[in-house]
Length: 467
Image 1 (spheres, rainbow, N blue to C red):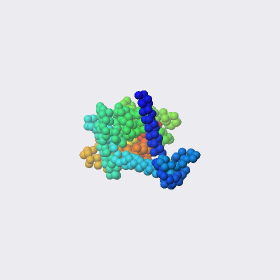
Image 2 (tube, rainbow, N blue to C red; image 1 turned 90 degrees about the horizontal axis):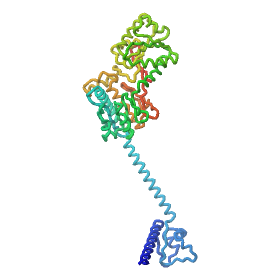
Image 3 (cartoon, helix red, strand yellow; image 1 turned 180 degrees about the vertical axis):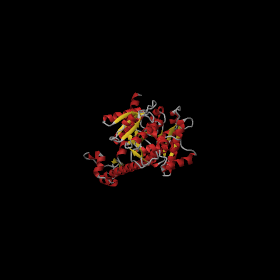
Image 4 (spheres, rainbow, N blue to C red; image 1 turned 45 degrees about the horizontal axis):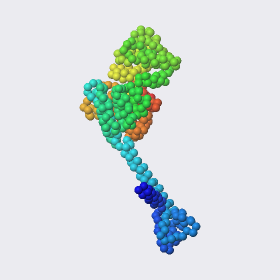
């Protein structure tokens, strides 16, 4: 029984080996030929279009001394050298064709997914409600965004808009679970700093551009390259203003007026500016709004042009300061006096406009709402037609801000795709109110670096000096 089992295993192994060799040969050779009576090596080679050398190489036993071709022998028939080369060429051509088709398909797929070749998917994540001031302001901002989308549609740019009400007490993570959120190309929001962590991680995961439209604490800007932050911190804004002030008024005599306003937060500005000026040896003195006329007069230079800065932004103290300066000019008309103010002063044009012109006033700002410009008037008419109401009496005008932001970023994405970085000069867009110019913040996101001086000139014209 054991001998029989050993015999069975041996025959099975031999059969398996022979079949393996046959399979290997089948893959190596063109086939096999059974020799017929009177056939010769030359005749067989000619029959299969191969050389004698190729036939002998495929059948090494032919090199044995005294070898004779006999009827019934099985010969391996190789592929000819020419057929192998042709096959290799065919295979190479097939691979090349397949690669070309794959590349073409990839290009078609890329073209289909590239934001420049399709509608732009825009998400708005702001408090959109009528419960409090935040909601009403952001609703007006959102209306401006929709007006920008309408204007771009007339230029052939299609935008798919999704909006979510992300109230202060809402759960931003629930909003981000909406499948439409992950498909956005651009998201505008949030308004609240506590929503930044989740939103920053979300836009990184899905490669979405995020525009923070208003000033919030967003440390994620330092590491997240997908973020655009429109408003700078007060400290960063002051640094820009200091540099531009020193550049423009280097040869002036600066008079800082203490207005005795205990509620003012402008002291940090005047203190920082004075320190910068003193380091450069520039003329600067401090006087008080309650000083006598004689002491007040002594603070001004008779030989240099003067620049006056108040340490408050309130309208009441500004009115008192203008009255005091008007009295000074009445007694000393030869004095050259320029006023340098704060963005808050743009709210006071109804009360102080004539004095702004009279004293050649400069107001630093990141926006300029000009109610007399044709662009502003067209926008206001269109807003009334669309929403049957006027914009809120606030600066900046929130609807115009939304329009400027949306137009800038959507037009940029349409033209440059996701490589758009908001740099100056990427495309010509005259903003209605809010100019934008972004620069990379280290290895992180991008910050708007726009700053302007709104200059009220004595000839009753207004100049915007952009930096």
